[in-house]
Amino acid sequence: MGIDMDMHPNAPVLLDDGRPAGPRVRFDGVAVDLGGASVLRDIDLDLAERRIGVLGLNGSGKSTLGRLVNGLVAPTRGRVTVDGLDTVADGRAVRRKVGFVFQAPENQIVLPIVGEDVALGLKTLGASRKDAAAGARRALERFGLGDLVDRSSHSLSGGQRQLVALAAVLVMEPALVVFDEPTTQLDLRNRNAVARAIDAMDAAALVITHDLDLVAGYDRCLVLEAGRVAFDGAPAEAVRFYRERAA
Ligand SMILES: Nc1ncnc2c1ncn2[C@@H]1O[C@H](COP(=O)(O)OP(=O)(O)OP(=O)(O)O)[C@@H](O)[C@H]1O
Ligand SMILES: [Mg+2]
Image (cartoon, rainbow, N blue to C red; front, top):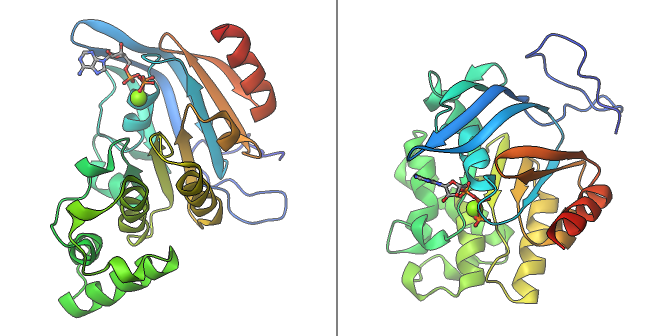
């Protein structure tokens, strides 16, 4: 897609057609040690593509990489910035730009009624009760989930839960959404619904997945191996690389 990164290190990146790309996420000499173990090391990345995949074996550091982007994990060494904002020092501002959809959405849905849960983010951003409720209803309707607005969050199926979690993040209009295994545990229909929802987002997406079909057509794909970026390029080659290494 020919993104030109040879400019000011935090300048917005434009696509060939002049549209702004995703927010600029930079990892500079990043390492993460957790519980005395080295989980990530030597990470230097300059990301601005709208659809980025992250592949890698269990334990290779994918979730940790995703969490660094919105400051859920702090680097032990080095620095992560989003549009020049430090994910640790400017954590609050970064989390306004970067939404996160967790691997287990039951950990993400906190309020007992679906509509209230989706409205929560809007209230946090200062919306009135009425505006937040209306915004939540619109966000759910966008995913064909309008009839769930008054349902108990606990009564949702796994697929509905994943889509509600996505609606709750998108309602805050993030510039980038990090997804940690968004299609794991979903049947084919819900997997396809989530894949389409990601494709249709205005926001940029960084998608951590074991679902290799999901990243086809993405702009860039990373493969992590034992805490390092072992491949960085087009999705087809990334999948080939990953298959060979995993064999
Ligand atoms: N808080 C922690 N304390 C100690 N070790 C941790 C901690 N969090 C993660 N790790 C270790 O760091 C490594 C990478 O974990 P991470 O969750 O980033 O991997 P992953 O690629 O997302 O794996 P999976 O595909 O299984 O989700 C693993 O070995 C994990 O056990
Ligand atoms: Mg993980």
